[in-house]
Image (cartoon, rainbow, N blue to C red):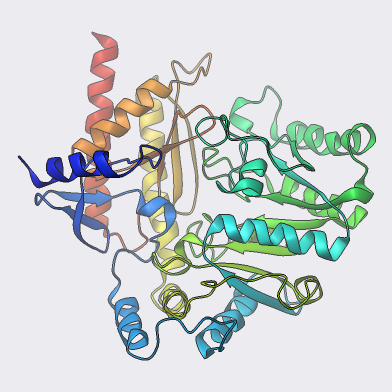
Length: 435
């Protein structure tokens, strides 16, 4: 029996079925853009721990920083005795996040926790309770974050009741609209005025939270006009705008943060995933007067802003800045998009190609005319890729999107090899359809 098979049996006996697994093997070691399982099989990583590894697996600079920190102290808890890396990382995020206003930052453990605390801060500052999120948005699996999320299965089914005073609005999905981009944006933005008249008055809305590029929703990218329209609505009614940059942050889209593409400054921003090369840490950064609304003790947590996470994050940001990883993200994205567009012309079941920087996706459909989502075919392609040495994942409300979140340190050779493996699986699927 292979070691992975033995471990899988032990896992099934001791771990609940709830946590999903993409590749049904166990990693032994990983470096850069590759993983090796316990049976010696090598994988090119196109999933990047769901967008957590923009600087790759075990980057030497981060590993060295962690070793140095472990020898000093591991976790005195910031609420008991403070430590400099926490302040250093706050200073850095205040500096590099969009906007030249005075900002403040505090740290937590996960993306969902950052979202929940951003909402707490928004409510405390505004004195309002209602929060608006969007169709297909994903903000986490804890109660409030799950309430803001817009996909029933697997995230919300039979987990209610959900948090009150949360509402959802449409979000542009141009591939599936009968109207052009301009008409779509205008129609959706107009719905806000109808919503304020028919559902909740703007005086009771604390914040609008959105992903500048929807991640789990299928890498759906809005127009600059739409994002600016959200900013204008918020300014008009004194509503806070929260940008959820948990998946889009730290170079994934070819800029440090996706909001830079739209030239819009949010009031609050949530960050996690690639902030620290896999260490569990998240952040909320925002205007100082908003961030100071909670009194001492009203926000925080025992493990929030761990020293290990802080030193790792500082090294990650230095790597992105010093090693040209923003430029590299755009180069990766150009190569992937060029290949994807070729596949769209070649295969009837490749319906749409979307990408911004190195955040790229294929939408799989039954045919280009009806655009009917084909989740079964997408799952088959993903499974075949995972069986043939490329770790890759799906996404989308209809579970019919194949997304790529490869580390930004991936070599051209690895990238081309990984894309070739995907193409081989597309050919297999195409032959099945033709036969």
